[in-house]
Length: 302
Image (cartoon, rainbow, N blue to C red; front, top):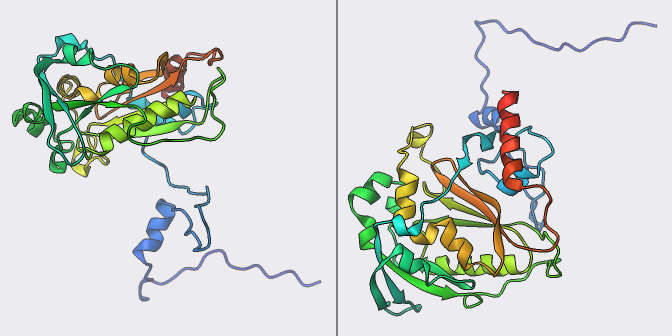
């Protein structure tokens, strides 16, 4: 039988021939694969996206069975905020209602005095709208004394903003339900601030762990800021002057018996931690310890 003809695997072109034109979008798709387009009749996107996300998920990373692809945890260190009593900042406690001017209840409170007003189901939120243009601009916020200008805070109550529900709620003393994520920014709209904390409270009450992601540099880091050495005083200063974004204030406002499932960590731009309601059946392994074991495994693999 005659041998089977083989198709050429490469084609050589003379340098004198016209160049081959390729769309830039085609080259981009090779280096940065994207999700397939969703058909119009599809109700939800398929879970086949190949793009690597930039966000770190503490809960998923700590429970991972492999260190492969967990390099985002390398920049994070344990974060322990200073006690509220050490902050020199002063704030006003106000009564806030939508569509009305805030009514001042107490003036010139220290953060320690403000902390005493927070309790399970009574969370702290800022009633001033910080301009979005200041998001992530630490030097401008500090030098323009923005914290002293936007220093009005109110106490919100659980279930006053929205009622939430979750499938397979773990309310029988067992943990853990489905993970929920909460994202907070300095420039969040005023109406969003109590809503997101109310939802977090109810999710934890229903047995779900909630991962809080406090973005100090906004939703996206500008290209000029990537890889830049950050001011080591940025995180402590912001935590001293914006108490509604402090992990200890948030934890105290969650349901009775709530604990850190993963203690606060930071990379200098984001503060993250996971809170859950204490239950009879809890993970035997300390997930904070497990998170840094994964970090160590990633470092060894480099």
